[in-house]
Figure 1: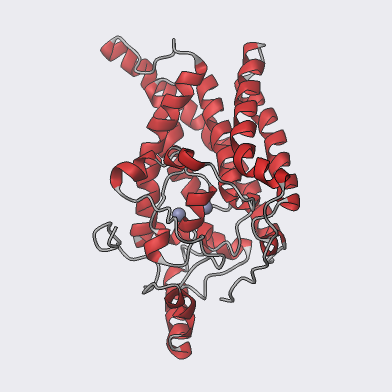
Figure 2 (figure 1 turned 90 degrees about the horizontal axis):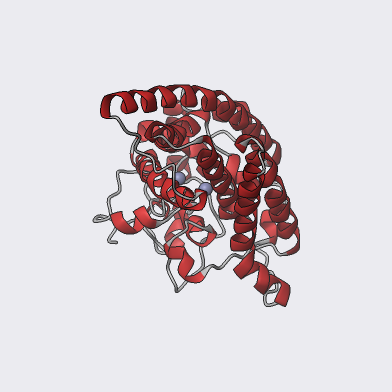
Length: 343
Ligand SMILES: [Zn+2]
Ligand SMILES: [Zn+2]
């Protein structure tokens, strides 16, 4: 895999300083507040979700062109149409899963009401409070699904697709295998629906996740200071895309970083920037076209075998960039634990 060329971007303009600190919180609060306003006015929650995410996406796309974090990450690496196809498939997957989950979830809620005489979800809370609760509860299942996706080879074969991205930009938020999407949806959406969360709070949770995901992968300089103890934003997530296992097997949070703090997997070094050369290590035979990526889990053994044959014939060359940054890289992933990573 070739190293990413990094061009220095001039820093320090007042516009960029504003974007760096304010873009994420301002866009997020504006979108959530607009969605609540539209729902209170009678709009269907899913329509409010669909409408309010568009201006947020457009804002990120435009800002990336003006204030890129790495100029090189604004150029196509042959990945744009692959990512567009992944986005289309994900939209379809969510569209199929959503009514299915709602049907099953409502059956569980009805069963709980009959059996225990109560629902578990505080539907009487203000919507903003319910959203906070949904983020915390939904994140717990997502944390463990994501962590296992890195630590178990039978799940990594699906999740490797997300980490095959050669650069980070807004569309990476959609670069997932449908099996990954389904697992995440079960871990969060389905659990929330089964607990009795209403369609309004599910729509807000989807909106928050979509906007957070776009900013998390955006090619923008984003610095949110102490909020990095709450949100799993770009500063943290760039380490998660490192080629070094000891760096990438950290920061599993999708929206919040709180469970990484609790379970000891948060990483945010203050003495260096995240690596600009990102992607997979030890999987040089991983395909880079859309259809082949969807089929990669089926051809996993062959991909692994070809990759290791290539690395043997190339000697240590494939691992030089990792070692140059002070790491001792394995084939990604191994069953890493906080203890053996020296955290
Ligand atoms: Zn991951
Ligand atoms: Zn990512």
